[in-house]
Image (cartoon, rainbow, N blue to C red):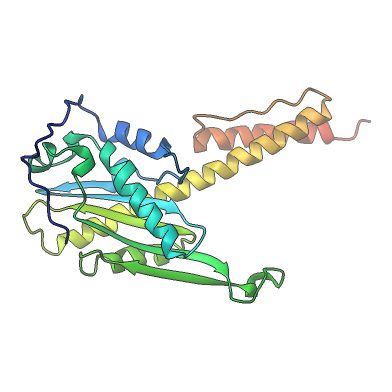
Length: 251
């Protein structure tokens, strides 16, 4: 367990306007640092405050089981993401600590990633790949095992799921494991939802290109910013009907 910083830091934090959980989530999932590491996924449901403790779940996309890369992501979370968490989301004893020094007590995590087996090149198909996984409690005994269980239950892969906890001194007992499980599940579900939305966005852009080619129109790329899953489904259906009409043989 990392020691908590003294609340009497000589450097006083600047006053911040009150920020909702939803507003903070939006900004934190869209930010990127100078090293261009991916921003983690989180959501309002992945935040739990219980008495003197705060639990927040995050998901980073993972492309390798390299310990060095995991360390870089954990450093990014601690140095870039955590300082932007609004004071209002913390219990009083954390609110006067300078954001950059308000370190989480635990960053427990679990990961699962598909990677090439030693000596394979990927040309042999699925048998060339294997699953690497692992977990670390970071002082919260059995916490990472709860996260690993969620990853397996949800069939996730290529993810690093982190639950950050700020411990304020009041012991929570077994309920802390429910909090760890719930914020990890919520963050992972949000990650799945965003992946599905991105796939819909790619399909729409591909269909747009086909429609423009059939119409001999100038190619225009649409980013589909602010796309929701419901709107994506409606647009995909509309694009399919348009393609069917354009590709229908003329009598």
